[in-house]
Length: 300
Image 1 (cartoon, rainbow, N blue to C red):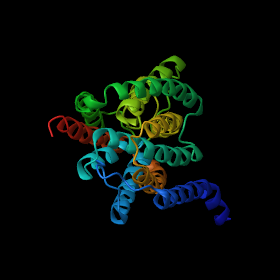
Image 2 (image 1 turned 60 degrees about the vertical axis):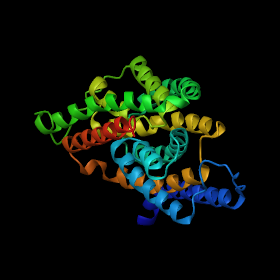
Image 3 (image 1 turned 30 degrees about the vertical axis):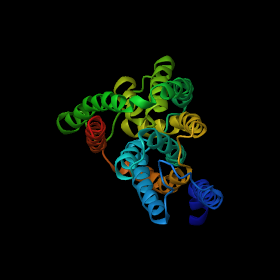
Image 4 (image 1 turned 135 degrees about the horizontal axis):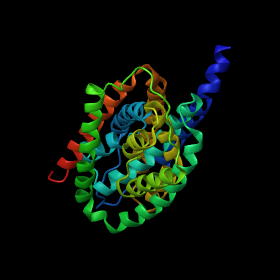
């Protein structure tokens, strides 16, 4: 009985992980030698292990907080592994595809996703990411400015979520599901998320979760699950475009993805063990961290 339950919960995830590992092995076996003037060396075995560990951490936060984990991966690729901004964006976004699939599946299986809202957000998001990917090509040399704008945006939700988690009287152990389902509003929110995902390579949870929570009345755990499921088609389209644009270091992205698949399951399994106030506090810290890293990247 326990074996059957385990297979029902994790068979898809195990298959997905095996596919990623086999794809990584194939890429490592068949990759051509780099040109002598290549800007970025191929990752060695130790670097691939480090990338997988980063993926586990990013996937865990992604599954817990409804984000793709890109906000963790991208700064580490840029500042820790010296990737160019464009290569960090593309490699991150391609890896986030699998974080979203793994975490989204886990939330969907556990009933942590509002199914009617997924289609509205996804349809708007796909349109947005096509437009954002077009602008990415035009603004590829202005990523520092874009990081500054996004970092300044992160300051406000970070502050308000920390404030609400500490001082609001509405942070009960159980949140009411006073959902205000507005198809047009959700589609517009999805389009905004898709547009920024196409430009900045981040999964979109930084906008979806607070937007669904504050403007549409979703309880935090339901916003997290719905966010992850909704960004699956958005990241698939965006990541594929970045791959075609040669902004993805495939072996690095697959190593991140392998770790993220495992981490996303850990995060999704833990979400209902946290009170809403705790999750909002974690979100506030997450947004504050993102703001500091993105704003600082404008100068460094």
